[in-house]
Length: 272
Image (cartoon, rainbow, N blue to C red; front, side, top):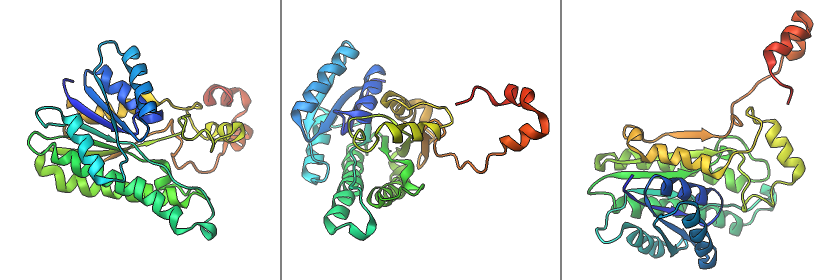
C-alpha cells in the first residue's frame, strides 16, 4: 500500500490503532490532533512499532475548516494527492436531555458532524483526480439508544447519514466513503465513562466476551482502503465482538428442562 493517509485524532486510542495498521501496510501517515506533545509522543511510538515507517505530525482542530484544509495539504505531500482519510476525531458531553445546554449540543455537533464534514470535504478535494478512500469512525450509539448521552447518539447517527450522502456524491470521482462502528475498545478517551462495573457489564453483553483493540478497528479501515474494498462504498461495518446484535429473549433454561444439562452443556460452550 504505497499511499498517503491522514488520521484525525491520530495521537491516541482508535486513531492511533488505525495509523498503526496503515503504517504496517506501507502507507505514509499523517496523524492530526490538537496537542502537539501528544502527537509527537504517538509518532515516536509508531516509529518504534513499525521500523522505517513514515509518520508525519500536524496540529489540527477539525472544527476549524482552515486547519483541516492545511492538514490535508501536509498529508497529501508534494504531488497534492491524498489516498486515504480516516475521520476519527469525535466526542460528546454526557447528561440528561432536560439538563443539556446549547453549549453541550454545539460541542458534539461541531466535533462529530462539522469536523467529519470538513475532513470529508477537503480529503475529497485532494482525491478528485485519482480517487481514494474516506473512512469515518462512528459508534453503535448512532442506532442503539445511549441513555444520558443523547448528544453522542444523535451526532453519530448524523455522521452515518453524512457518510451515505458523501458516498453517493463522491462516487463519480471514484472516492469511496464508508464507516466503522467500534464496540467497546478501552482507550484514553472512554476511561472515565467505564469503571470496572460498567466494563464488566459491556463485556458480558458482547458475544465474543472481550474488549476490542484499536488495531482491530484499524483492520476494518485497511479493508475499506485497500484494493479488496474497491467496490464498497456507503457502508457501515460494526467491529464490536457482536455487541450490537439485536439479541432477544434467552430460552436456555427452557431448553435445559426439555433436553437436559448434558446435551445443553455440549451445545452452549463455556459459561461466561
